[in-house]
Image 1 (cartoon, helix red, strand yellow):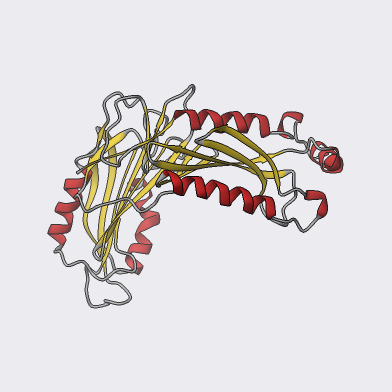
Image 2 (cartoon, one colour):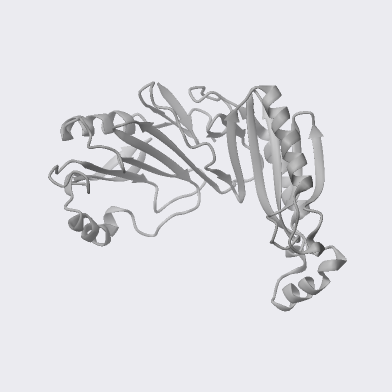
Length: 317
């Protein structure tokens, strides 16, 4: 089955389904997704708003807990709320809810807002500490950013391949807007009770050295766990150069099995990461799972079939 995530495509067995629904971050905006029937979404919003209205704060000065509600449409709402009952009321969360194409998204971002006169002393302390005026109230900019992302979101089946430039996330698609945002997305495909495949991409967290160039730092750990290297070297992932290091090792529960623990990893674009060259980090592991029923050669073959299937989606950028 072809899966789409970030700007790329890859093939995995049809039984593989992503279980990580909340690991998409665009700049500092977090996005989670879940397929829901519309009545369930409506009930979620109703209950959530009531809970926020009923929430209390430790310090009376930080009331009300729910500062404002922005009703964008019958399918979209943003709550401006306190972080928690004890946090100061000027450090808050914008919590957006969107329903589209059968998918319910939660979009959230932290804000700072010391514009209220009751936080005048905090404002003075921030300014004395070197903070700029435009950093004291980030609510308008963050609110505009949330609205913009929500306007570009759509629901998507995990095997559905978009034709527009943009980014695939779990159950959804974010159509490209202006600029080149920082993106950090992780999906996990378990194949229980054998192993789990993790696929991560980001467009900004690079490293001056590649994985193989850091092998002298990694090898002591592998030696400690008595790992055996099955393969190590340079490969191609989606036409990008990548480092690959495939290891197996005994595990705590299977100390006599030299292949009980999987430590397969490949990383592309680690040193040249940017919007058009995202880091692609692939991991095959079986942490806390029984030893794999496959031979080393079979595991490498499974790994090769998946990793060599990666390609950049047409019109991804």
